[in-house]
Length: 628
Image 1 (cartoon, rainbow, N blue to C red):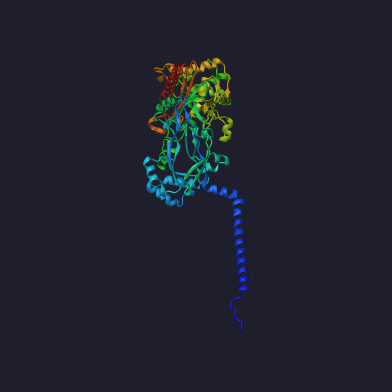
Image 2: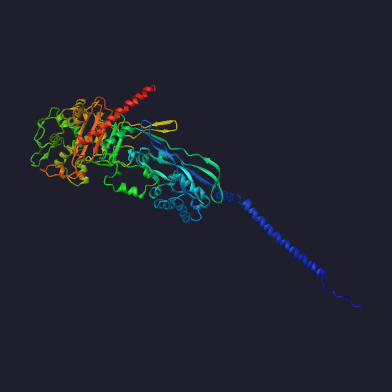
């Protein structure tokens, strides 16, 4: 009987199965080893790196803007503060569809085309990742409510409360305090890395005035916070916080009552007035009319408002007090008389015969007096100042020569920036032989000297320079730089701003007495050109009127007001100080096309000085009541 046929080789199959098991097991172990190695690489070797990256996805550093320093007048009245305003901002990295989101926002609240344009410009500027960019400022309660209802549809959009600069007195201090505005491309391009870091969290920077001059002090130091966010960028909690350092406060010499009096007195006239404390150089008032409301610029001025300001014939954006350069006219006469006495050119008893004009030896041209028939046979220093005799000063300038006039006038700050702590000041022109040769490429002529003698020709001054010159006269030759800031306060500590004299000229007391007494007669004398303003005056004032031509006239041509357009009429000027016996305040005033200093400019100075002494009485009464 044959053996049964074997259909399976169990030994071979077992061997094959075992081999396959070992192969699969090796493969599984190999894969498990690779997985463990990968886990080890991720969790151990590169743990710190991936942990940081993970934190970066959920933890963000947010800058915290510092509170900008405040600005006060000398009586503690707030001139520039910060007010809460709700701002609509977008974070580019968290907005999935920027254009769609903007369209949605425009359907919810009003967004002006100008706001959109500024927003897109800000997006293009250099900025930190996850830094919010403002789209709309000063949201109303109704707008905030509508945005809150639609919050679920607005990824990367937030409404936050921010402090926005506010100027409670509007156009009263538009030029002097200035304003802050959005940082533009040019400013941002000029930042170094340190400056870039300083402006994180804020979108504003001082543009003009004290806001610009004291930007570093007012700005403060930025803080920051680490926050944890969800996938939509919403802040879940604050992990770490470093508070910002607020900016320091400025306390000024400016007095709001005196400033208001200056602007009210100028009224609808174009011009400027500056009042300076003779003893300290502190600027009590600095008015440029017309003014403008700086609040318009803080969050971005509309095109309509800017066009109206920029295209106005009255140029309200132009700071006449610092940048307006005008012929000085007869306001220079007291200083020139003092120069004549000091250099020995003018004897105290010297007189002239004034037929109404002056001629240079060998010249037929007539240099006219403002009175065609002249001031009489014996016109001396006192009459020349009190009645403003041009012929006397033609004669004096001719004998004194420009080589003596120029250096003497420089002691009073003419032809140079005063050094005021405000940006944009212009130097005016105080001409000399060298100046004309370098600027005009021409020689100096005797007729040029005569024009300087009456404040015309090449001479130009700013209202601020007139005030400084007058303060130097009142202080008998001691000149100080005009200062806006009296002291800086940081917390409970104050830092006074020192202001020592920058120039002194020694002139005999007898010469000072003669000139200052003549200036007193300008206001209080029976023939003084400013006698109209002495009615009811409770203090003694010294002053000098001035009228300066801005249109050339032929030698024998007479000035006919009816034939001259309003904006081409003479400029009106006045300088003054008070009280005469112990000068405290000096003023310089210019009224554009006001024609006569006695009627247009002198009343402005009177109003300013009245306000000053009224303010001083109130300050003294307050000090006394507080037991000072």
